[in-house]
Image (cartoon, rainbow, N blue to C red; front, side, top):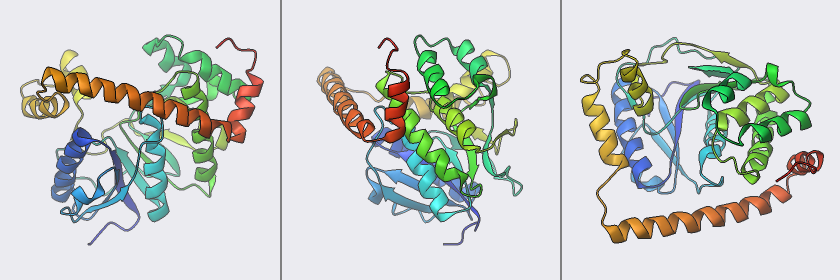
Length: 290
């Protein structure tokens, strides 16, 4: 397989709907980025054998709701390439990937801002307090910590700082999840980057022509995109995300999801108890009301 030598694309494809999305993305890449490898972690990697650009590896979700498993994808990609572009599996590539992609040491994100500003905007109840606790334990000034949108960003090695970044991301994700904050991995990455000295820069432009449902819905709402132009992509995305199911299937799915959630939460607490940095976070914030 002919590939771009210094970088790859990468994503996580766990479960039928995300595998379906990832297969469509793999086809897009064959058309628009034919020389780039696509590193993929999946619960069924054999399903991707037909795609010559895909290198699929077996993976089982480790974080409670899967958001922080992006760490494993990026670690795997950087073990094979100097740089990688992480993309959510449900994006679509709509045009050629330029040769001058924005690679700098550390992270380059499409959009981001200060972590305080971001959390003030989203106003997610009870999510910012654990972030403040992590910052206090790491002796970070939150005014200096950045947040970035997690659906697409590049990551490049930075003289070994990426290793410290990954270790801190793991410990921070343990703490946030044990405090009931399961998403917002951009917060965890921002905190880990600030402490490890792993650079974060913003590109402020699309890396390549693409479709992401929630991004385009917002653009349509604000008059920055034409709903008719994206109608086909929105329809395909909706059909994958919301397949027709019988009442029995819906109930069974809900029961399975609840059982999986509590199993992962129990496993998380066991794993976290063995993490020295997590124990330091917990000890420093032992007086915080849970």
